[in-house]
Length: 180
View 1 (tube, rainbow, N blue to C red):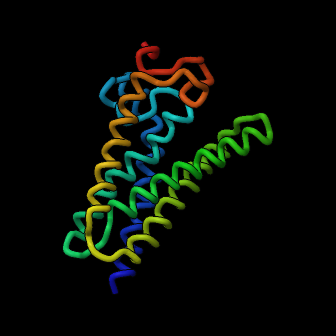
View 2 (cartoon, rainbow, N blue to C red; view 1 turned 120 degrees about the vertical axis):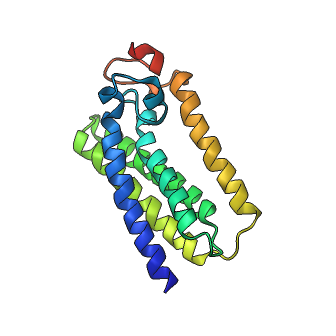
């Protein structure tokens, strides 16, 4: 049955995104602060940069899943766009609600917020994928929006808005250029 196949792909995607996202937290430092690595991996401890841990592995899996399901008529990019947006929203919500309620940042809560966000992203993606019918213009627009979001992550790595969302709370810097 197709739903079982999609469920299996989403479960593998959850594992893939969770593992790669966790490892990506360290890639920039492990690379000796390589600028290319910093395009896709966090360059500091800001909430914004940590969304890369969810977005880029999820995007990679989106392309894998699109290839695996290419003979089927699903709006993969639409389901993935909505899934990733809700996943990032949930990640940030857990982070900011806890920080606002306690006045503290706790690593265990930050890590849990990532995994909760990944889980929500894949649950929503699954629900929308199995209920979608036909590939249409909305799927193409969703693909374009995913690419625009990815480009935005890269842009704001170099040119962040000077607000706390983009600021590294450990050293009070904002962008990749301040890391050298």
